[in-house]
Length: 395
Image (tube, rainbow, N blue to C red; front, side, top):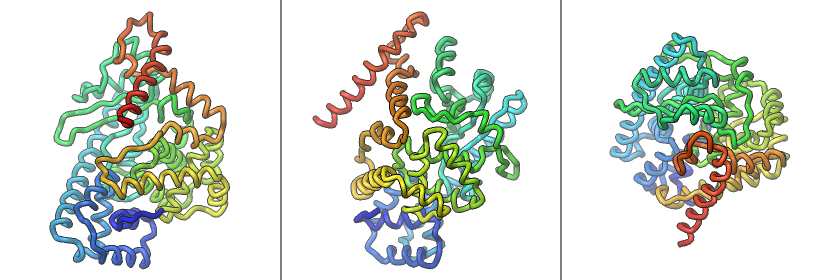
């Protein structure tokens, strides 16, 4: 990937898993250039790269960084660390409450990813606590969160809740404390329309222990986590460097992963190309080392390289323009190209057009006996939404 901004190159160096003398020398060389430090911080913030930027600048050549900039980075780093410690404590409290009610629960991403891939809670930013529960346990888990003063994003009627459990994938809760905690309670990993049918029972059978604040908790296996991260990044067009860094770091520190199992599961789920794209970005952009046979399969799909080029183009536009004014391209077309099977492309389009969600209920509230009409209303609402967005851009 090429960009005219040395500030973005510096971010890439700080995200890279290759921390040899050559990498340090590259950071040193970039620090000798005339950097726009204010822009660098403004760019690092939406990429969730502030902690890693501070960590590597402090270790490599802190004397080359203006004092005011280093102070800002240090202050952000310590605030993020304190926030992460508090969130991790809240996660452990939630898990304890769920365990007391005999509700099996598995945290993933967030603190567990920071522990697994970074080995340091301070080096990764996370704002949400993602917890996976069985669908039948969602109502009782909701009750627990509300009893702990978490507020649901949406208040649903019993009939809406029943439909949402069938077609939705998560409930979001927030608590207005010092750090505005957000909890995402999942019974599916991804929205139904995204057609990523990862079997929750399969996930639960392969859990692994990780230490958080000195306590062991169960989380998803590195193999399953890698695939989840690649699908999540693809869903969001890989617009945040931190997401690519997560994949690269996980590959780097968990060298004993069962790659054959990862590839087989991705192929079975129709998510092989999304996996390959995440691996390609982590390897090409951040130096993650892939097994030879995996690298060969990644390189064999020309669409992967084309999609990576689209990601690089978006990142370059972001790097060379104001992050506040940046707009992403047509992500649904990107999602379709990221599917290797025709039936998954068709399923994605059909489910996107017909799977009812909370926004449809808010758009036009209907009594329970008229809910089937939402399957007609939703395509109309989506058409109205995207036409309005297109007209705003054109005008």
